[in-house]
Length: 125
Image (cartoon, rainbow, N blue to C red; front, side, top):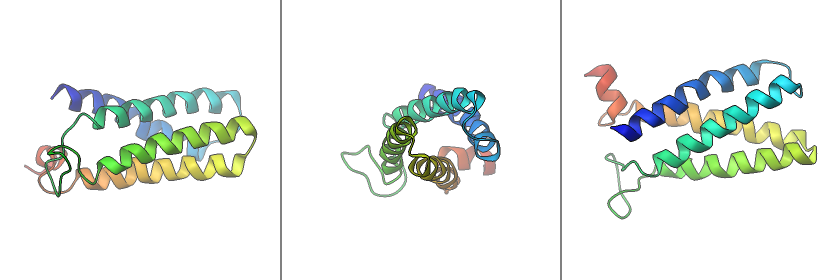
């Protein structure tokens, strides 16, 4: 349960920070500062999920499920987006950050609402 608490404590602010970043002016100091926080939260939450066993669907080593692929996608996307931003490759940065939000938050969020998942149980009984 402690991992779920850490996961929720990092992903909930990331949901709002990511939406804010996608909707606001880019390239400002504020954008960079909030972006670093957002990326940090996403890396922490992806790391935490690797320690959370999958209870729905097929498993690898009685622990990892298909949803864990998204954790590695988050690591790749954050690293690629950060590198691209530092290189001035804004197109690649933007593509990875939008993909991070869509895949790491929206798609993963839909998975959490699947029957048998903890959040589904909390929300729908």
